Length: 399
Image (cartoon, rainbow, N blue to C red):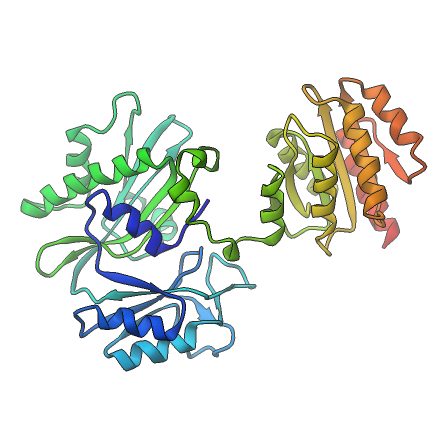
C-alpha cells in the first residue's frame, strides 16, 4: 500500500525526523489557509499523487509550457493561483504513464534555502534477506539514471535484521554522503531514525529524494515516498486508514474486498490463477504465444465458489479482455470446487468471450466432468502450454 508525501512526513515526524512545515489541502481555500500558517515568504505547492517525477510532470489540460506538479510560490496569491490551476487536472509523469493521475490533494510547505541535495532510501533486499540503505550524493535526480551513468556514486549498506541498526551503519551513511562535523552526526542520527521507522511500520520501501542540507546547516527531508507490506497492515490500523482509494484502480479495490491479488495490465487475455509463481508463468507463456495478459490475478490457495465468481466479474469488467485463461493447480484447493465456481460465474455474468480452462490436482476429473457437463462453451486444456495456445487461438478466431 502507498501513501501520500504529506502522510509519510507525518509518520516520520513521530520518529524525530526533520521535515519542513507544511499543510495538506483539498481546495484552493485550504491551500491559502495553510500558506498563511507558514512563515514564508517562499511557499511550495506540491501535487499529491501516488507517483514520482511530479516536478518534471506535465498537466494534460494546461499545455506543454505550463509548470509541473511542484511549484514555488512567492506570495499567498501565487499559492492560490497555482492551487486552482493544479486541482482537478491530470498530471502525467514518468511513473503514471500516458493516462496520468488526477490531482485531488495538495501539500503546501515552507520554502527551504538549499545548500546541497542527497538521496537516501531503505528497502528489502531479497538477494541478501536484509534491509538495504541506498545512499548517494546525487539527490534530486532520477536514481535510475545515476545508477546507469555513474554507479560509483551509489553506496549500498545492508543491515542484518537479527542484529539491527548499529552505530557503524550510521557512520557508513554519513561517510557515503561525504558529510563532516555536525552534519555527519545528524546523518548518523537520521539513518537510525529512518531504520527504526522502516522496521516499526513494516515498510516495503522508504525513499527520501531529496534529503537536503540547508544553508544554516540542518538536514531536512524535502520529499519522501513510503509503501508498506500489505500483509502486515493488520498491525497498523493508523497506517491503513491513510489509504487513498481514489489513487487506486477500481478493479484492484474490488479485488481487495475478496482478498484477491489483482493487478491490471495492458493486454487482452484475462488470467485467473492460484499461486503467484504459477500466475507469473501463465503470463509469460501467454506472451510467448504472441498475446499479452490483461491482468495478474491470484485467487490464492483457499478460494471458494464465491471468490471465483468475484474474480470472473472483475476480469470481465475490463473492456480490453477478449478471452480468459483459467489455470488452476488443486493442491489445497479442490478442482471440483473451482469448476463449480467457473460454471456459476460464467452463467451469472453471461460470458461472451472465449474461456479456456486448465485444471490439475485434487479431484481434477470431477472438476473436468463439471465443466464438460455444464453446457457452456468452455475449452479444456491438458497442460499450460496447450492452454496458452488455445486461448490465443480462440481470441484470434473470435476477432
